[in-house]
Length: 477
Image 1: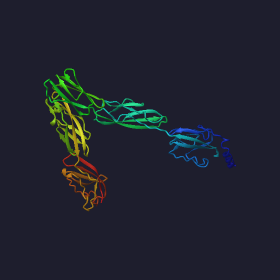
Image 2: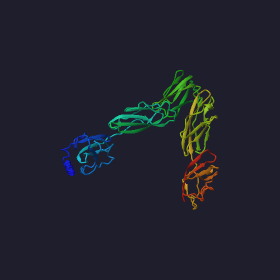
Image 3: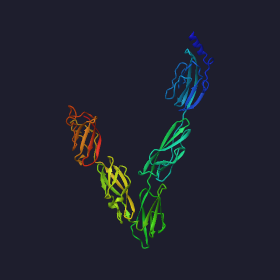
Image 4: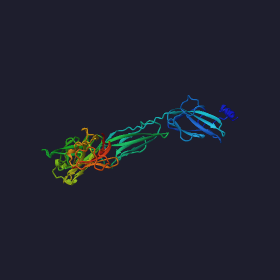
């Protein structure tokens, strides 16, 4: 009798007990967007139980085949056994849902099928703007080329030293912070996060390279022409110059005042204004004739191995008719790969921070007895005379039987230690001669004189230096 009732109710599934779907009638198509969470519901009756299923294959018999939609395409955000459920549509496509209702005695009372069309959501954050700027420039950043039904634009500066005029909106401007004390040129990253109406987000990052302001010095031979004028030169020691402008309120500029050289007449305070390629303007004031040729700092060059600190007497090739004051010597632009330490005698000691060849540079400034200052760059070429092996095979075949560090002969009394993975010291030499053959020191390993194959940690303190080389070495047989 129960089976008969079941069959009758199956045959009369729509006529006898129609279900009221909140979204649409049976097989009506509802359009949603990828990433959207939509509710599906029917009228709830006491004692009934509900089971919702999702299908992505419409060729199957929904009455016989259980839901076949992959969880990566669409999924219930909570339970699928209530009168109301929520579905997260993850991928675009055509989907079907089915709800089966059982009464209190678990007879199937009805089932209902509906169609959902999920549309693809185009969403992309795009920043447009200059990627190279001067230190004084406002760089306009625009998000108008971003794709999607966007409702929010959020900007942020990733690196310290950069500022934005606005944190929200379609556009913003980036500028170097007035409090930035790091070296230039430098790269600064700005991030854009866009949000659409469904809450989906995408991001984009632009890198802006900020160039340094120009640094200019005014030089002259000190020779006054018969007409009482003197030619002075503006030399750009750092950066670049697009335009020059000379002016004075006391003396006189004879001839053009917009070139890199100028002819001055009469003593007084003169000014040189330089505009760089980005439109940034710097100004240098000087007294003529006394200050214009009183001091000159010349570039220095040094070549050194990474293992040694090197002292450079930067003032040795500089000129000051008034006399340098060594105590005014200071580094204005620090090196990128090392440390520059100013000494009391007017020299600068450069210490590489990392192993490896390359080039580094720093800028110093020094002043003289009449408070005239000049600056120059110091270029450092760093080379590496050591070769670090990756491994060796002390098997007695005469090939690669010893652990050899190339160039170690330049550093006598080098201390070498090697440890196993547990941190146990297994070999040490206070004056390593590239002669270790894989044997352990006494009592470092039980009943074993030759260490097994594997990776070991070494520490090599180069003799006569403060440099320590650390790393891993592989031993195989």
